[in-house]
Length: 354
Image (cartoon, rainbow, N blue to C red):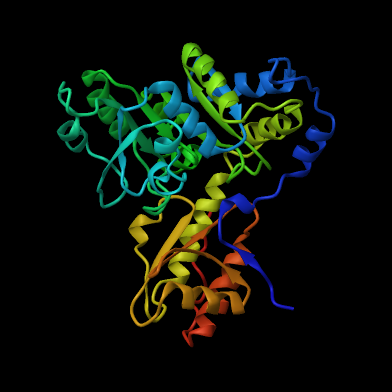
């Protein structure tokens, strides 16, 4: 039987035994009535971790981002963001369809917006133009390879927006990966922004849910927006219990995923027809580019034949994501299997990682 190594996404993580036990015994109430005690504990813990006054449990990161957009802006405003950001590329145009916002995407090489870029596109006070209403950042940046915005970069971007009089929202779906990758306190990445969303269900391994955090006033608005878009839940404490375990038990171990991603990238570098930029492997993602005539779809199917599952990012680009369900032994298997598939000798021994 072929071994399977699941590298499509860190959303494939399964809940830990401690999460399952906590879910089974969770104290619950009606969260729409704001009476679920486990939800309260999760929201208090999450807000404290990212240095905000309050937070809100939402079913998904996409909903968290949409609630932030709805809470920060008015229809007709323009939102500045990076061209490959999740909000622009992967959230089904919710910002436009639901929130009535115009998006202003900016190109970058690595997912890191520059202050001068943002400053250059801030709208003047002109009745012919939409007012600039929000800046959105992404950290880590998914489509650009899991790259990180540093505390200094975050602070500089926020300064431009705040000087011009509009807020900043951070899509921090993998913000704890960024903090671990940068060896920084997560609050150094989140305190400068006005709101932050982060996921519990990716590398942190909870089965469901994300957090939206900001000022108490902002979260009150966001709670109403969550209800409007269908995110009000009842005895949601069974989910929040797993989220508490995620925050209390799973953050530090993300470093293992980063080490495995580096191990994977170094092991696969040099495969025929494949280019991997090791400088972009900053957290738990490995992206590769296929040189013609090889396509990403063909490469993915060949990988599947030996049990290695990965995701397609474009016709020529693929992505592998490490997570708690992928061990260093799995990485070694994947590297060996793919190099054998392409008739390439395996680097021996594989680089040891700590």
